[in-house]
Amino acid sequence: MSVSGNVEFDEEWYLERYPDIKNALNNGIIHSALEHYLSYGKVEGREARFKEPVRRQASAACLILAHRAPQVLCRAAILYLNAGWDLFIHLDKKDDFSAYERQLGEIRPHCNFIDDRVEVFWGGFTMIKAQINLINAAMSTGGYERYILLTDDTFPVKSPRMLSKVFHPQYDYITTQLQTSGTFFDRYNRFFLNDYAPTQMRGRNQDNTFIEDDFLEAIYRLAILKRKGKQKIPLYFGSQFWSLTTSTITKILEIIRSDDYLVQSFEFSALPDELMFQTIVGNYISSPRENGPVYADFSVSPGPRIFRNISDLQAIPEYTNFIRKIDPNAGNLIEHLFERSMEDQVS
Image (cartoon, rainbow, N blue to C red; front, side, top):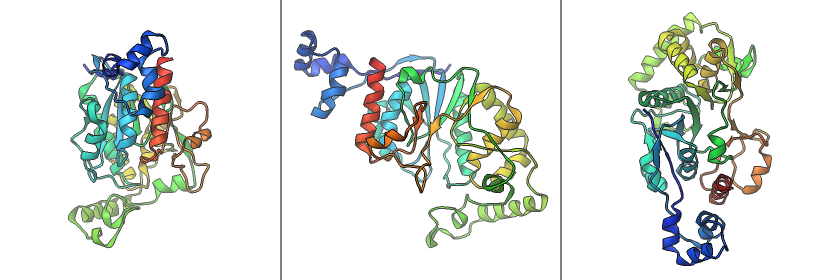
C-alpha cells in the first residue's frame, strides 16, 4: 500500500529555539509560530525545521520530470507532500544528483528518485520513455487513484489543502485538440529522429555528433517505417502535462505494450510528448475530461514566458493550479509563491 508524508512546520522546535517568539505567542502578539516565520522569521534569517511526516495512504502519485531546477523543486515538493501525494522523480541522465540532494535537504528521504533514467533529448521520444518509466515506478508501489505529470520548474499556485481537492475523482485532465492539418499534424505524419546527438534539436555541437551503432539501428528502423508509412489514426495535440485516473493510465500502458506500430509511429515524430498520450486518450478513453492542469504563458515572444519576477504573476488566469516555467534563480519569486501557498494552508 502506498503512503505519503505530510511535511509540517515544526512549531514546537521553533518556539524552543526562539524564546522571544514563544513569549510573543503567549502574549497574543502573534497567532502561531508559522505565522511569525512566514511574515518575519525567514527575512530575519531564523531557522526552521519540518516534522517527520505522519505516514498515510497517498491518493496520488506526482511524477516529476527533473532537469536543472532543484531550487524550484525543493519548495514545490513540500507543497506536494502536504497535499498527500507521493513524489516520483526522473532526473535526466545528463544531470547530477548532488544539486538535488543539497537543495531538498530534510525532505530528500520523501522524494523517490527512480533508478531507470534516460538521457532526454528535447523534442524526442526519450521524453515519452521518461514518462513511462515514472509511471511504471509509481505503479509498482500501487494504490494510487491518480497520476499527475509535472516538471521540476513547475510550481503550484494553490495551497496543499486546495491541491488535494482540485481534481474530480472521475475526470481526466489532459488537453486533446483534434488535428487534421497544420504544424502538429505534420509533426506526426512526417519523419523525425530527435533522440540522438547527431540529429537532436538542441545542444548539437561538433564534439557530440559522432555516429554510434544505436543511431544506425534507429536509421534502419526509420527507413522501414518510412516505406510502410505512419499508422493512420485521428491525431490529438495538447500540453505535455496531465492528471489522469488509474484506469486511464492502465489503458494507455496496455495500448503502448500491445501496439508496436503505433508506438514506432510516434517514436519517429517531433515532440511526441504533446501528441502520443493525447492521441491515445482522444481515441480510446471515454471518461469525462478537462484541459491539462499546468498553465504556460505563450503571450510573449519567444514563448513560453519564463517567470522571474513577482510582477509576472499578473499574467496568470484565475483558474490556474500550476505554472511553468519558473526561473530556478528567481529566489524571491519562489519564496513568494511558497509562502503564499503556506499562508493559504493555515488561513
